[in-house]
Image 1: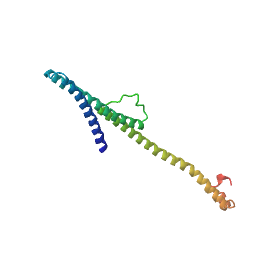
Image 2 (image 1 turned 135 degrees about the horizontal axis):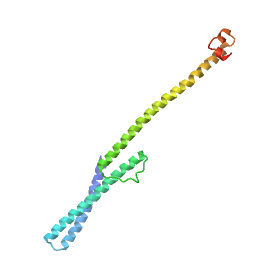
Image 3 (image 1 turned 135 degrees about the vertical axis):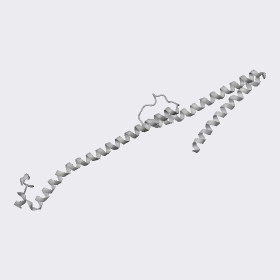
Image 4 (image 1 turned 180 degrees about the vertical axis):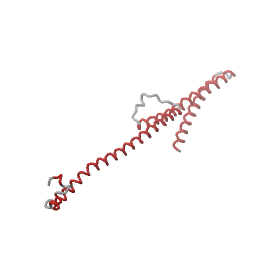
Length: 165
């Protein structure tokens, strides 16, 4: 929070300095001429216009920098080309665009989670389908090695008959 205040104070200080310098220059120009009521009105309008344009320029620049930073941060997350797109200073449009980006990323994350669950289930099924015959053959071989080769009743059982031992 202190950093935001610091930036806003810096912004206000620079704007006030520019307005003060501009107003001082206008005052010097005003007092250079004879004090007439029309010159006073002209000076007031000139000061108003100068202040308006200085503040407008500074605010646009201030907001533009912030919005550009947001666009750059979003561009790092999303691999799209923001250099060719115009950067809007409309906060509502920016908010909608960021909301749309967040929604798209949420949908993408949910899709990836579903794919991950499917992948885990698929690998589990493949593993089961491959392990079952391997363990069956392994148990046949272990049974035969344990002495079932000499035992004729085991060799003639329906389980070992397909092996033709």
